[in-house]
Image (cartoon, rainbow, N blue to C red):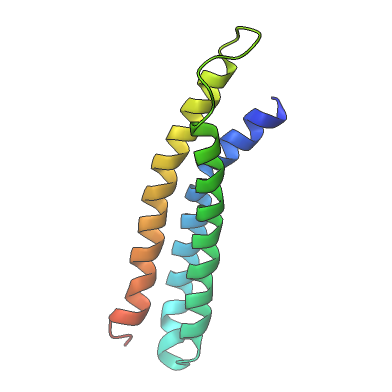
Length: 112
């Protein structure tokens, strides 16, 4: 795997583990937020950190999605990287929506 393809795969798939970390962390802190209301700030920080990871991945996916159509040596490598970039835009956007949606429950829903 070349460094470019490793970065493209990371940009395409980094949103999934970020969402999973957010989901597990928020669920594990939900009961603690009832006992200690200050835990809400930790939950907001987790949401911001996970959203930042997805935004960084989206920026990387955007750069791969905008690659030129043809390479100088005639290989289809740019087409594969462009596909991974576009896939990363879709996956990242969905995971960002999930993270923001779950994070909104912290502020909007009655805790206990």
